[in-house]
Image 1 (cartoon, rainbow, N blue to C red):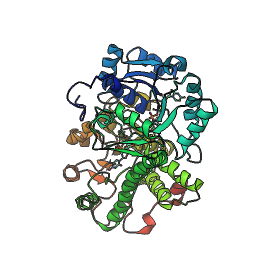
Image 2 (image 1 turned 90 degrees about the vertical axis):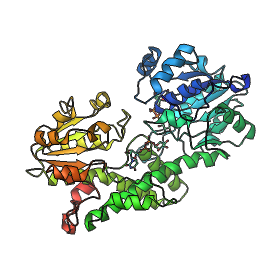
Image 3 (image 1 turned 90 degrees about the horizontal axis):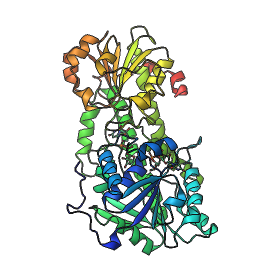
Image 4 (image 1 turned 180 degrees about the horizontal axis):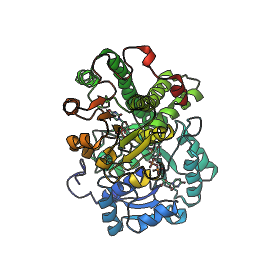
Length: 469
Ligand code: UDX
Ligand code: UDX
């Protein structure tokens, strides 16, 4: 696995570059951070409280699908530079740097729940070295670092608190770690900031930014929310395309050729899922409200995204032989390709909505089947995508896995009861599928006036569905 920007020589082994590091939380972020810091030559202990996950790691098994991660963990588990524990008294006393990478899930009102963060802080206080630096890797609301510093002081600890937000994308997290656009260190203590920057001495970043801690905390949310905004904006443009006969892919290509806009994150479709965008857009809006701001754009961005999966189900139901009944196949349950993460996945949400409406649903995913089995109807998961297509009235591509794009679509056409495909990611070859006789549905690519909403407002979303959204 090419780890991108890592300096080609082995890590610089000068003593002052190698550190004792603890990482709290062995999730998608904590595990990647631990393995990559070990690859840089540091001595890393990763603390995980979930017994099953800890047992898997100690048995040399990697509990998540992330390209390039397993070989790193195996290699550094073997060199002894990476080990796992659930004991703070074991992990903290020798550690100069402690990364907090526990989850910060949304509470009912959209705020980020920092309960796990502060539980970790309270647990590490009794064991902290006097020169320790506590580093928040998890995405935390602006001002959390101040509250952590207050908790440390109350506990009699001297440690500095630094924000080091991650910008890793699932599916390319290891490569992103070693080839980041920027390394961000937010600290009010300049010396601590420099010590943290030195941990990444061997990483080739386009730039390193040392800023105040609150700026680093807020910038993480703002960056994610901006990327999410681009996507919701394109989904709004896609609606206008469907009503007017423009093609959102062509519009996006024209927009993206402007260097000020750039071509990425302009893809209309089922919208964003995952453990970050949905959580971070809500949390930033809630933070804004806490500071007395309205955050109207953020609320609209979230609403538009959520409606995509509702509109998709509505569109599919309009194409079933008997409205509301029939067989629908859903290809892709992970929230994006190259991950097994199904959190907030549009594919999962559609399976649930369609099944709840009485439709017979079949589904498949190349790597997320085990995680999906816990939240799709019994018997819905099929061993391969062609079995999902067999007898289906509509086939949905909800996640643009390469294996779906490369399927034998002539065979798919023969397997289906009626040749209707919903391309949830605008990733299929529309002209080719239409030449095979498929009815091609998507967001933003319908022929003039034949969009899912037709030319007449009356064909728009049924009020009940929007309210159910
Ligand atoms: C998390 C946050 O959700 C994200 O906002 C942040 O950017 C990085 O950390 P992720 O790694 O996906 O992202 O979370 P998750 O996959 O849920 O992993 C968290 C891990 O921490 C879990 O394995 C959990 O068991 C563990 N954990 C949680 C602890 O070890 N101790 C705790 O007190 C709480
Ligand atoms: C995101 C940020 O990219 C990353 O920097 C941050 O650290 C964590 O959150 P991630 O959620 O792993 O990373 O995946 P990403 O590739 O950003 O995709 C997020 C969602 O947006 C996915 O559901 C994807 O399907 C969707 N997406 C992405 C679109 O719908 N259209 C696009 O053009 C791009």
